[in-house]
Image 1 (cartoon, rainbow, N blue to C red):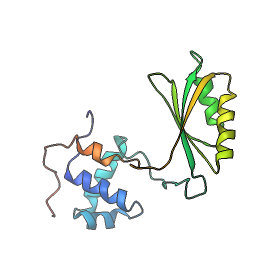
Image 2 (cartoon, rainbow, N blue to C red):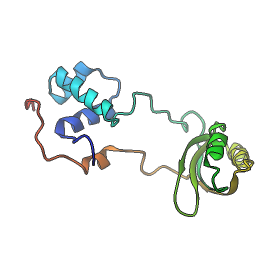
Image 3 (cartoon, rainbow, N blue to C red):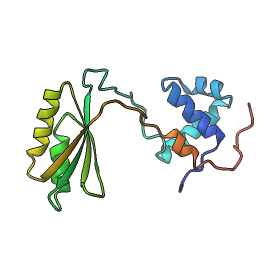
Length: 167
């Protein structure tokens, strides 16, 4: 992993924030047993490196009534990625979209309140003149939620933390 080397203090900080994102710096320092200044400097380092990309609530669209979800693979007209991006961005049910390699050009995650609403969203996606073909895969249940810490742990640094050992 290029960039920042993460150590035990960084992982303790990230895990604490992941478990309870609303705690402050002082409470975080108490929980992971390092000085408040250490927490502040480590947070700044992780933010500057882009590892912490923001502090916003995790929104569960299923809990809000949009529990019908699917993934949509799109084959697009050659060179029309920006047009497809604009079309998808204008559809509220498109939660995220990625340019991909392979048989499809774009992979979208879509949510709706009902199967009827999902069908309308899929038809709206298909109306874009830049979409040549689509394949939908309905989600039955989420078995592994989005997570990043297990992957980050694979790049664990062997260096010792610079902060004093409060543990």
